[in-house]
Image 1 (cartoon, rainbow, N blue to C red):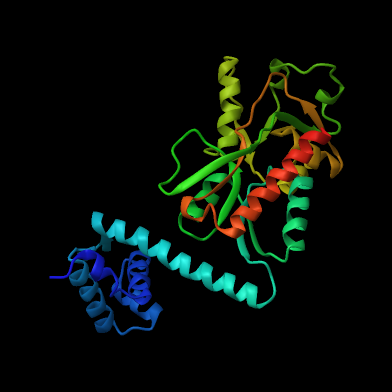
Image 2 (cartoon, helix red, strand yellow):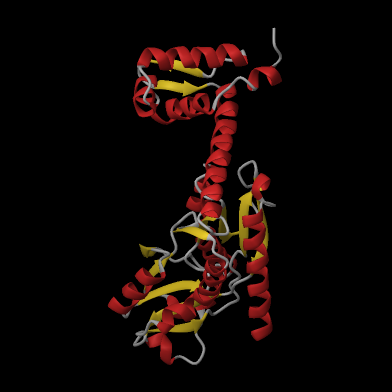
Length: 313
C-alpha cells in the first residue's frame, strides 16, 4: 500500500477545490454544481480522495449537511493554503507579464495615519506593484488573511495568540486622543479630566476590536465605568460626519487619526485626560509568505517610512 507522501503526489488541485467547496456549502450537490461536476462524479471524486489519503474527511447528516471530521479540518487548512499559493503564483506571473512588479492583496485598518498610507501606496505604485486594498478592523482582516484572501495586513498587534501559521511584527505605536465637534464645551477647557466626560454620547470603535479593548482598559484602571457607544464605527469619514452632526458626541481615536479627522474640518482634537496607549500597529502575514519578494518589499518600505516619520517628529 502506498505511503501518505506518495499518495499526496496523486492529488490534483481540482480535488482540493472540491474539499473546500463541500465545506463551504455543506452539500456535495451544491459543490458539484459550483465546480461543474455532476453529483455522482463529485461523490466518486470525494470517495477517491478519502481512499487515497486513507482518512474520512466528512460526516454526513441529513439536518446539518456535510461537516468536517478532525482529519478533514487538517486537510481543509492545507487545501486552502495550496490553492492560495497557486492563485498567488498565477497573479504574480500575470503581473510580471504585464510589466508590473508583482501583485499584493493588502489589508489596512482605518486608524493608520493617512500621510503614511499615502506615501506607502505611492512607493508601491511607483514600483509598479499591482494592489488590491481592503480596509476594515483588525479582527476581520486577520480572518481574511487566515482564509488566504489577503497576503498581508497592516493592523493592531495583539498579545493573544494569532491563528496558526500567522506572524506579526511591530511597526509603530500610537497614543489615544479625544475628537469632538468644534463647538463642544470641552474645547474651551484648559485641561480635560475624566470626570468632565460624563453626560456626553459616544462614538467608539466596534466592541471586540483591540482599540476598543484598550479604551475599556484605561477607564477600568481609573476605576471609572467604560463609555457606552451610541454609535460604533472605525471609518475616518463616518467618525467625522457623525461628530459634525452632534455637538454632544465624543470619540476616542489614535492621535494621528485624530489629526486626519481634524483636517476634514468642523471637529477638534483634544488630548485624552490620562495616558492612553493603543495596541501597536504591526505587519501581520502568513509565516510561509513572510520572505516572499512582495512582502519583503512592503516590509522594507514601511520600515523606512516609519523611520523617516520618527526623525521628522
